[in-house]
Length: 277
Image (cartoon, rainbow, N blue to C red):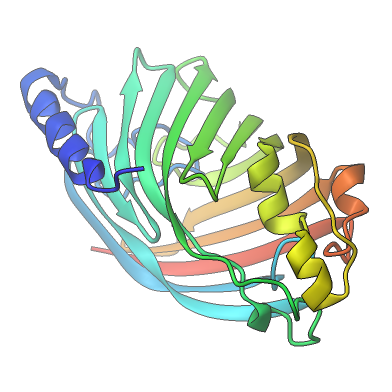
């Protein structure tokens, strides 16, 4: 995949937006009123937020080792009407609300690779380190009603040949009546991966079997996991936002049987505090 196409694509979309964009209906209203979709612009123009996040999560997919990480959090965004360009952590892209009930997102993100050092107990010893990947992302959401109380979505992430393809189907519900993107949200999701993507995390090649002592494992593609995510986002002051997120993901039986998998599921909990300029 040619990574140089991403800046060019963003420039082309930006030119199109300047020519065709409609102004937001209500100043201060979020692009869509969902806690899972960040909008720090207060309705139009630039939006910048900086802060810190604390995450408690598995050391790698399938691990029974957990780690606590403290990392920077924030975003830089620019919005014109129903179009928003963003740089949010590891993802760069564009999202747009269309006909009030559709949300389209295109972007690129950095997916970190797994290394043997990710396991302090040595459970990855003998397995090859994996490279980081820049992957393309497309997501489409459909809200039921302009208040986006309920929604369904599909997301596709694809990269180089060594990365493969990951697809996600989701259905969510928003609690509360806020239109500024704060409140509470819950969504169920299912993931589907190509055989390359699944084996990247849970497979063991014949060469790795020799060096690690684990049995060679070649997994098929298709259904990968089912999960649930809860998100709560609130203003503590006019400029300070608090975000809490918790999720659980349960793997399919084939992944559970992989020698790399130490647990049938993984849990992730995170909180963030950001200052919105």
